[in-house]
Length: 396
Image 1 (cartoon, rainbow, N blue to C red):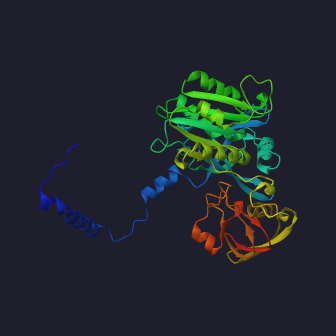
Image 2 (spheres, rainbow, N blue to C red; image 1 turned 120 degrees about the horizontal axis):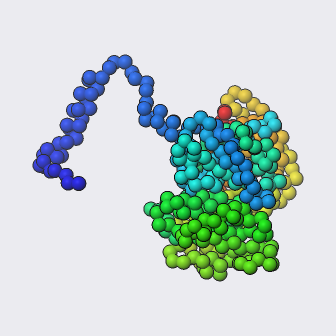
């Protein structure tokens, strides 16, 4: 495209002509205000604040995991990228809980009138919601949620074309989505090598589906690494530096998704290998169900019980909280609505204000701004009480 130059004075005087046209539009406009905002209306339609999903099918993905397919009942499914998550708002007993789940289906599968998303969930006894889904989410069940959230996805302007994915347990889900996109040619010429740590060969989540994708496309490679199956013919033990270097290839970008204990091992390996932050991406990490495993945990706090005075506008409620549970869990248990998304302390949706008392916030995953730390704000999903508290939370 060529640009016609009219001359120095005409070119630099262009701003004044635009200003004159703008003033002319203002002078000719109606005196009656038009409340319509077509851009806002379009944005709300493309990215609704709340959506209703219906479960259309449920299938086993391993002996301990299920995949739930969902369709939107009130419109289209917003555009998302492999690695992002959907946040569900679930009514369980008297409480309303919000929980995030990485979308395991590929973005291309959500397009069109028959589009859908899938989440793959592993049963996990210490956490309430996975078991609730296993026992209550059947075809026809309606769920309320919104999407997409998260920044854990491949970005060609930042990441290399050689994706090395390090996964453990249900952390396979974002990489399964990426692999499906790659097979369908939706991620350019990117390729993915998945090092997937599991315990037993008969409990590899999405094993058959991953093997099918690997056979279909030579830009997808899956390496299962089993720690508790001595008869496994493939790689055994844990994912080590030697294994990572063996399968990395040239100019890799490393992605990690898995449990906290595995992340600590992988992060140490990345440091030893000299991998820069730019080349090591990891998903939001949930804190362990046993808080004593958290670095810096104040010993003995898990056995204590506190009271929390919760202020919402002009209302005030006093609840009981265990020293072993995050503030958000105490609020949920007391049926007080709290808006959480990432459940790892990073997104800030559950940002609340500490008016009095002492709290414990793990250094890892503390996504607060510096000013928030100085002014007493905290993220309820990743904060534990160390004394009786008085807090102020948003009204939902």
